[in-house]
Amino acid sequence: MLLKTFGWSFAITALGLVAAVFYDGWTGFGIVAILAVLEISLSFDNAVVNAGVLKKMNAFWQKIFLTIGVLIAVFGMRLVFPVVIVAITAKLNPWDAVDLAFSDKERYQQLVTDAHPAIAAFGGMFLLMIFLDFIFEDRDIKWLAWLERPLAKLGKVDMLSVCIALIALLISSMTVAAHAHQHGGVHVDKGQTVLLSGIAGLITYMIVGGLSGYFEDRLEEQEEREHEEEEAAERSGRKKSPVLLAGQAAFFMFLYLEVLDASFSFDGVIGAFAITNDIVMMALGLGIGAMYVRSLTVYLVRQGTLDDYVYLEHGAHYAIGALAVILLVTIQYEINEVITGLVGVVLIAWSFWSSVRRNRALAAEGGGSGTRDEVSSGV
Image (tube, rainbow, N blue to C red; front, top):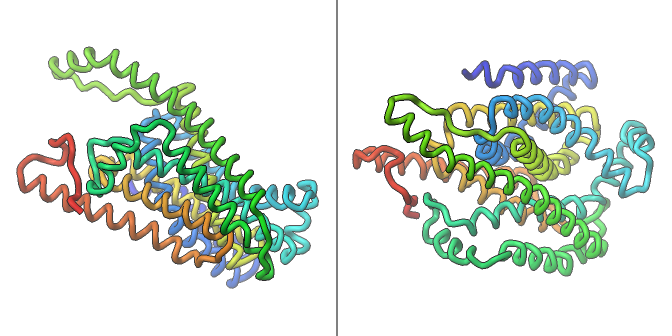
């Protein structure tokens, strides 16, 4: 199971490290390895959230996620994205931006750094909306019950998450964006840039998330219609497979996953420049890390990990909320990538341990892991 799921990741790792040695010797080997670890540590929460969406898709779309999705993640976000950002912010054509990436790496890094406020605002707002919509939804299983119960009641107010996100964006545009960090340690006013980029991130979330939600609702209606058939199958001893997303529904969920992955990629791409400004080594290192995130997502789905450890999804969404705040703060202040990665790891580790304690408590009571409609961690 492990080799089947992570086989491609192992192969890409070997090829990537060999390519790094040929490209820049053992120095390149070390840099690519560090970048791969950086990407995995920053994106572990991404894998957990992705798994929560991917488990709803059928086998065909799961394969699409692992093939076309990987190409988009590796070549699109880790190679093309930095070039596009430079082309847009420096008003260059894409070919000149590519030439700049290879011929003048210092200037290329400077332009990407100067584009960070726009990137952070877009990604921060997209991730913040994911977090807010999660915590304002009333769920049967609650992790931090003392916090999630009142928030679920507040979530009954229409458009509350959008209002909070816009308030956060407005505050950011008037505070941290007024002294945005730029290359060379200088600070400039990027209020308008942050405001426009943040609104673009919000609109992107609402369009992609709205379409995904629409088709997911249609799937739920289909599941309700098949409920009687499922009960009949159970009575006769036959096992009925769950209804999985396919067609248009799966396509929009796939699109949602790719935009989500793009938002998670922002901090990894920007953080990579603290290690190297060589676009080839950056693509190799981050690409290897992206492969492991994809494989980990599939592993979580196939093992049913999210069903067994029910608080993992909660921990991942809290990590998303923390990352959204960190992205907005980094518009003005530099935050070490180690801190960013550790925040996500700690929250997910905490949620995993809470899940283990929950399972042990339920097992001790003789109820199993799925006998209660509402369970909280008690913390």
